[in-house]
Amino acid sequence: MQLHGKNFIGGTLSAEGENTFQARNPATCEPLEPRFHEARADEINRAAEMAALAFQERETRSAETTAELLEHIADEIDAIGQPLLDRAEAETGLPQGRLKMERGRTTGQLRMFAELVREGSWVDARIDRADPRRRPLPKPDLRRMLIPIGPVAIFGAGNFPLAFSVAGGDTASALAAGNPVIVKAHPAHPGTSEMTAVAIQKALAATGYPDDWFSMVHGVQNEVGQILVRHPGIQAVGFTGSLAGGRALFDTAASREVPIPVYAEMGSVNPVFLLPGALAERADEIATGLHASVTLGCGQFCTNPGLVIALAGDDLDRFLARLSECFAAGGPCTMLHGGILEAYEVGIEDLSAKPSVELLAHSAPEPAVGKTQAATALFVTDAEPFMNDAEMAEEVFGPSTLVVRCETAEQMLELACGLAGQLTATFHAGEADRSLLDSLRTVMEAKAGRLLFGGFPTGVEVCAAMHHGGPYPAASDPRSTSVGTAAVLRFARPVCYQDWPQDQLPAELQNHNSRGIMRQVDGVLTREDVAD
Image (tube, rainbow, N blue to C red):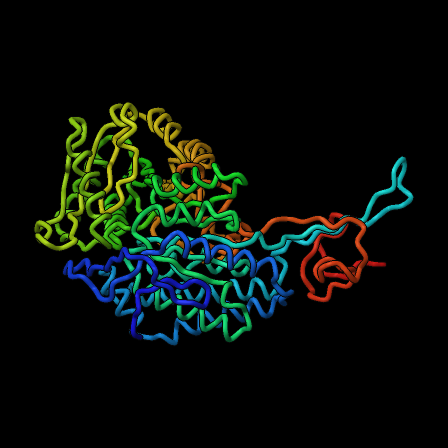
């Protein structure tokens, strides 16, 4: 596929801006052709206006048509074949095996949302029938369901060029809810983004959707995203990235004349609690697993375990010795782009400079000069200085982790109580740790979106039960998830119809349940028709 480097403004290619940029191969630092045109304000606004008009004038589309769109996008992505993987590898440095898995996740979640829409119960239909005999006032007929919210702005993530990018989970869930989408492509993988955008355009044409239902704009400057979020036609935002980036978009959306929701997943340190019984039973096994989790993908996952909390003692010393061996035996790894590497190096330099923090081990040999390589790093500190220095609890995005030694169980609980919101919290415990485990779990239920027993948090299953979010600053809204079928709820809103004629109600709310969906009728869940 020949890349053109232009913006997708509906069905029109546009390159009006003078500012251009190139992707770089992080493994070699070589620039990649072509040059990509940063979108101008008028191009961005035009895309938003077209999406808003398309939504306003939308035809009533069946759930089957929406499902077919999602499936066609998946099919078109698969049809690109090897060139998509090759370009993604060149732009990110990720290995082909990882990219194949990510492509499968991307198309798999598109098809998952297609099945969700086809089945239909996600609209949460609720019917309370009228009771004209009720006194002192008759009860009206009330029927409620979820409907699309309107044009959604999606920001591609830097660490997932496919699964959290142009056709990733945010886009899939927004389209599944029935909304137009405008994507701000991540500048680190613009070529991969362009190839995916073409796949979406083909799917729109094949299923009869208007071209204006999807746009994609490029940009290196933060202002590109700000212009998009400020446009009054945009009704919601999906974002995966840094706390600073997510908060900036959140503040912009809140300052609009009509504020809109921003669903931002912004990462966390994902604490791992190692309780005494677990360390006594399997310290070496946990150390090996932790090292693999910290360094997986060069640590560039928002669920990377960047904080380990344990009680001081011989078993912890044995664990640290084994973990140090693992870090020392590994080599440096290639990060996604220079900006991530720079931020990572600043983070580990700041930790290393703290008198109470010890650099226990790091990878060898040293990272190659002139390449986007990072050294892995293992740090250790004690609970008291950790709790007195908020900077130690901040995310260092990359292949490092900080182990905190606690003197007592009470100190471990105190430390847990002081943690900010997290995407995940992991617990390794033995039979004798039940009381402490119960106390820690109670604390972390209020602070994390996903609690793991055993294992490690890297790896997020895409399914109905997954919750990928958490209290601030892990996410802007702890009730929302960016992974799994519940993600569709972010981009829908409820509408209640009171005393409407049957033939003018949406099919999902009519007495005859033509779609066979699960509905709540007078407080009871059922798939049966409603009696006249």
